[in-house]
Amino acid sequence: MEYYAGIDGGGTKTTVLLGDKDGNIIEKKVLGAFNINSIGEDGFRVLIDEVIQILDGYGKCRFLTIGAAGVSNSTMRSICQEKFSKAQISFDLVGDHIIALEGAHAGDAGLAVIAGTGSICFGKGQDGSIERTGGWGHIIGDEGSAYSLGRDAIKYVARDLDGYGESTLLREMLSRKYGLSTREEIIKYVYSGDKATIAAVAPIVNDAFVLKDKVAATIIEENALSLALSLSGVKKKLGLEKTYVAFFGGLIDKDTPFRSVLLQKIKAIDGNITYRDSIHDASKGALMLSLKKEI
Image (cartoon, rainbow, N blue to C red; front, side, top):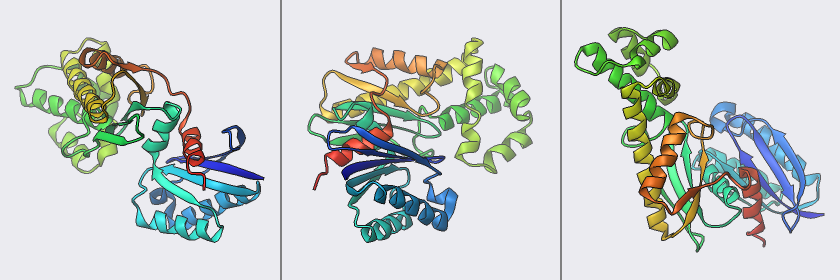
């Protein structure tokens, strides 16, 4: 039997989807994490062998698209090239945002926002071109991300502690939930951790916002505005008129104050951008891309 395949390679699980030439699902398998940084080179080799075993069990794979984070990793690419070439499987390795976008709009033009630890806005034009804004990293970018909300929360608490900032509930919440109440504790927490350490603070901003804290409101308003402006930049680059946007990432994939404010900002900035839930998930997006790569 001949078929096509798509893989959503995530940080905690790998979803393998097989489909026929019409896109009908033949099989779905879920394996372990795809992230080579977490499972190591040997673990990644074992994972790819598992994928190949699944594919071989169904006949001839005409094309495989793999979407994952960190696809610029040379070791990841070389292992994939080695393993799939030996198995005579033609494949393409693309960013996880590409397959998410493809699935979200069922292959049509559209926009997407990812707001997790970091943030990025991207989209696909009518001609199939891909554009992005944001994604500059936490030093000069990542506005509207969990990192940005967490950083701003800690920054305003520091000003409150120094006596010149506005009083905020975030100070009490940071102390109660994270045990950070002194200068020394905050400095140690911030500078001995990483992006994820600071991003972990983001939930208290939503909590304080619900309690009408002015500082939390400022943080959410400013970050949501930055993300909405970034999204409008993608739309402009692509020359789209009316279009849809899908949301991804822990900060906006559920009903949170930040998500609500972001939707308001998008509507205010450009009424021709309309939110809708994803039509398909990322694994289906990967399969759809494989169907377009028929050789």
